[in-house]
Amino acid sequence: MPAKIDPKKLIILDRDGVINQDSDDYVKSAEEWIPIPGSIEAIAKLYKNGYTICIATNQSGLARGYFSTSTLDAMHAKLNGLVEAAGGRIHSIEFCPHGPDDNCECRKPLPGMFKSIADKFNLADLTGVYTVGDSLRDLQAGKQLNCSTVLVKTGKGVRTIQSGKQLPEGTAIYNDLSEFVSAMV
Image (cartoon, rainbow, N blue to C red):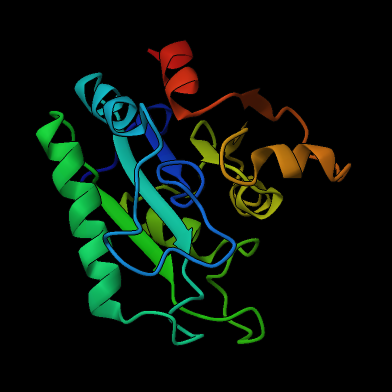
C-alpha cells in the first residue's frame, strides 16, 4: 500500500475529451486514440511539479463489444508512452468496463473509481483533489467524494455547458487541460 499523499497534489482526469479526442462513435483502437494538443505536455508538467496523476474513465465500449481489453491496454500504453516521453508519469488508470444498464458502482456519475483511487492512496475522502472532466457525470462522480471540479471545453465540454444542466457548485471552467494546468503550476 503506497504512503498517504497530499490530496492537494493529486489530480484525477477523465480520459476521452480531456486528454484525447473524443468520438460519439467511441475511440476503438490505439490508432484512433489521438491526444488533444497540449494535453500530454500538461500531464508531464503536473508530474514535474510534484503531482500524482490518476485517470478515471468510463469505457462502455468494452461491454458493447466495440473493442477488447487488450485494445484498451494498447490505448493506455500509447498514452503512458507519450507522457513518459514528455517527462511525466501517470500513477493510476481506473476504468469502468460496464455498460450504462449494468448497475455497477464504478460507472460515472457513481463514485466507484474515485473511491478506488482514494483507497489506493489511503485517503478517507478526496477533499482538496481536483477532478477534470468534459461532462457533468465526470464532475458528479468526483463531487461525491468532495473533489474540486473543473470542466474543460474540449470533448463534450461545450455541449455540457450548453445543456443548461446545473454544474456542481464551484466548478471552474477552462478551455482545455493545458489552460487548467497553466493556471495550477
